[in-house]
Length: 205
Ligand SMILES: [Fe+2]
Ligand SMILES: [Fe+2]
Image 1 (cartoon, rainbow, N blue to C red):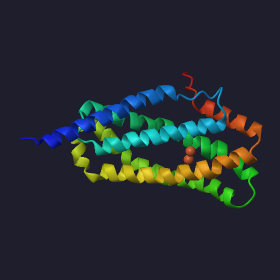
Image 2: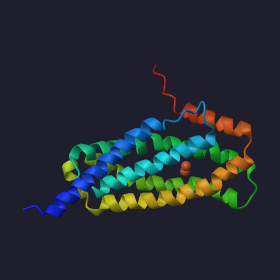
Image 3: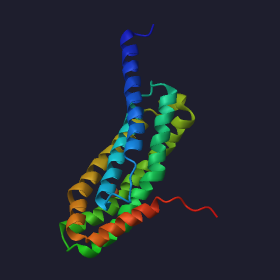
Image 4: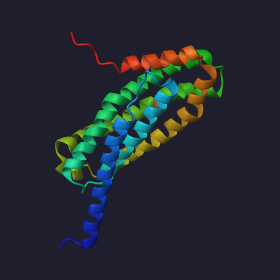
C-alpha cells in the first residue's frame, strides 16, 4: 500500500510544479521585452529575470520526477525553448554588442577584466547547457523515462544554477554599472537597436 505521506508529498510536488508553470506563462506574457521603449540595460536585466526563472523551472523539473507527465513535458519544452532559442540571443547581445564597446571605453583594471570574464564565462555555461539539453529532450519525448536520468539531471541543473549565480553577479555588480558609467547614450541606443534586430524574424524568401 502506498503510504499516506508519499501521497501528500506527491500532491505537494504537483502543486508546486503547476504553480511554477502558471507563473511561467505569466512571466512569459508579462515580461515580453519591448526594445522600442526600453533601454539596453533594462532589456539585459529583463533577460536575467528570464534566465533565473527558467533555471528555476529546470530545477523544479529535476526535483519532481513524480509530477504528472504532462506537466513535466510542458516544463521540459519551456526550458528547452528558452535555452536553445532565447539564451543564444542574450549571449550574442553581450558578446557582440556590449563587450566590444566596453573594451574600447574602459580603462585597464578591474572592470575591463570583468568585461573579459563575462565572455569567457559564457563558454562554461554553454558546456553545462549542452549536457542538459539531451536530458530535457528525453523528458519531453518520454517523460516516463525520467527516473533513468538518476541524479545526473539534478546535479547538472544545480551546477548550471551555481554558474549563473556567479555570472549574473559579475554582470549586475560590475558590467552593467560600467555600461552606465562609461558608455555614451549613443552606445546604449545602438546596443538596444542591435538587440531588437537580433529578435526580428528572418524574412522568408
Ligand atoms: Fe547577461
Ligand atoms: Fe552573460
